[in-house]
Amino acid sequence: MGYRVVVAGATGNVGREMLNILAEREFPIDEIVALASRKSLGTECSFGDKTLKTKDLDTFDFTGWDIALFAIGSEATAIYAPKAAKAGCVVIDNSSLYRYDPDVPLVVPEVNPEAVLGYAKKNIIANPNCSTAQMVVALKPLHDRARIKRVVVSTYQSVSGAGKAGMDELWDQTKSIYNPTDSKPPTKFTKQIAFNVIPHIDKFMEDGSTKEEWKMVVETKKILDTKIKVTATCVRVPVFVGHSEAINIEFEDFLDEEEARDILREAPGVMVIDKREDGGYVTPIECVGDYATFISRIRQDSTLDNGLNLWCVSDNLRKGAALNAVQIAETLGNRVLKKG
Image (cartoon, rainbow, N blue to C red):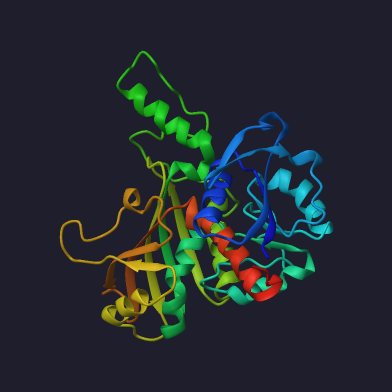
């Protein structure tokens, strides 16, 4: 016996990945429906060897459906998630709307799977920000061993994190570089993204940080440990898919780089590729389509008594969004719903 599953936002980058991953991982499904806005009504989406035609999110009745994976943005989620939850359908939401709600669990299954049990307060579970998700997968096993005091992270985030419009802008601007008569000024981003990097993701806050940086701080504390201090600089780079992070970690106890490497090799969801030679590390283009969070460049920080540096790369449309949502559904099924 399987589940009746809804994918809302099925025509977007993340929604399509959700459908792909549900099929790839053979999630136990009796019935599945793809939902989209009225303007995308009838659009075809692939689900394994099947083709689904989208139905209208606005008129859909969630009664009798078990799980809904939402990838529709905060404004639409505010309208439709409460409707689904009230109808008895558990919502797993990829937007930022519920991440900071104390009555909604924020879950990365490799890190805090037990948190799914808190879903019942609102019938909603939140998916973290893409940059946070991959980082906490890397931090969790190290924190269990040596207790993390402070994290300094710089991110190199792909344009797919800004949706299809971000990917289109990088593509169009890159072509225009070689055709100066076809200028493509920035519309999605604040400055040219082609052959450039932009130290600005989301809105600026009063303290000078951006909302993306604030998200990494608050979400890491909620998912992993409220005592950890986090400071982040988030940068958009001209890469289509795959987020990278340079992470500096200060521990309470000494942790040798060799032991850290061994711990990470055994950690769920982590793949260590760390050879001190040309090409002995992972770059974002190599992680596309993969489930793992890749760790490279593990080394002691000589400026700290108990410090390590590492390089972390992951497919942001998968672990940063769609994969994590499906893993939450799997965890919910195994621990609570128990079908299939």
